[in-house]
Image 1 (cartoon, rainbow, N blue to C red):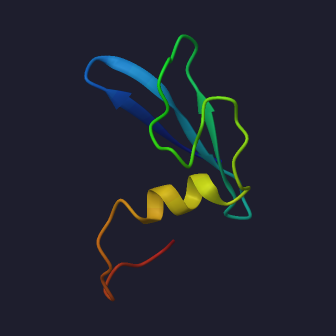
Image 2 (cartoon, helix red, strand yellow):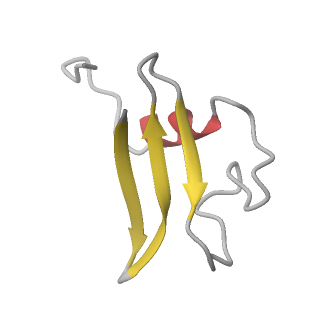
Length: 68
């Protein structure tokens, strides 16, 4: 399992987790009072693929980008 820790300044926001099948989930840190995206509300009621799509859209489209 791979992890990506998300921070805003000096404060942890949450952790993105990727399982062995490539599914990405998000766990917000305790005490977070604002979501990192409207597509990732704090109540966790988002589409199953929303966390992975959020991360994919952080980078520009590039044909040389390779997925492991």
